[in-house]
Length: 411
Image (cartoon, rainbow, N blue to C red; front, side, top):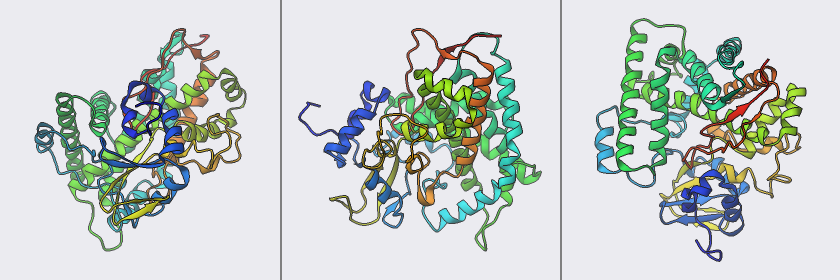
């Protein structure tokens, strides 16, 4: 891409854009806020006003196939997927009226009392994990806390045993790579097999709960109803549970990792949080704005519709860049600067907006808050290890550090 040519989203796949996409997003907002990417086969929307208009208009911008890669999978990948269950919509990639039915069912099953009862369990899991490395003086926080904490929490809510964490983590990574669609075909085939494996694994748990219900989310989802609509089928449950597990694990891990990456690079900010833990919730909100774990989401136009000054045709795939909108100077003061005390903090789109606002947002906020409170309390002098290079997962939809190697002053 020459300096004079208009930017396109395909540049996001270049390695330096994977590590820091925000300069590209700034150029998009300035020079091509709504444009068609030939290579990606989709329209890209990058300004806050336009992104907000799209996500608040579910009549014209459909969520069906939100996770479908715009580039068709290779035949080998499709053949591997055919060995599993049909992939049906599940909340994020569904539209009313079925979206309404499923969201009501999940909201009933994921009742406030179930979430509030999890806080002591989250504290206990975080304490146990920290006990395992707090005396070492150094660790990779992604490996030791960032991934295992949300994995164990969502596993506990769903009713999945801790002994399955490692294979569930592998399957989660497979789903992430498969959604990106930019891995070699052979690796995509492996990921497709991973998706089939988690489908069959979840089908087994559903069958067990139908015979003997437990006090867990799987059982609650089987039992939940919405008015006179039918209960969730096994195929619907499999897709829904896979989505809830992925979001409850991967997205929360990335949110914690992005918050830590930010404050570790700014020791003064880390000191403020250590001295005043009550600031942590605002730091979480600012992380959702500054470096969102979910960078973008797909929509499909029901009809030809204008976005800004550009007419997008009927049936077009549209990529709404939440992460770009969150750094739009037209919506936020000093958007490139992290500031938990900013007055416009609540305008961020880090958890989406409208009917598809993240249903697990309260749980994610709780987990990250508890993790940060315990980290800052138990790891004095926390700092990045010398020579540590933070690299990010190679995925344009999801953003989080692959590792965070740190040091501290052990007791």
